[in-house]
Image (cartoon, rainbow, N blue to C red; front, top):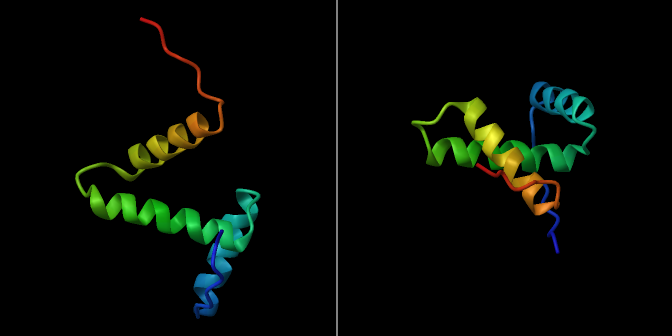
Length: 73
């Protein structure tokens, strides 16, 4: 279960997050979680391009959701 935490964001940052959230059909909280998840992955893997990290995280989410299909060689 998630724990509620209050944080202060500048108006500009809040507006930017709101735009990203609307584009991705997410709540503000979900979008902040996603951005933090991407940020941590990028910080832990500075040698990887951001687009590659995004693709990996999306593939992981698809697998966890049961949408991934096995790849046969």
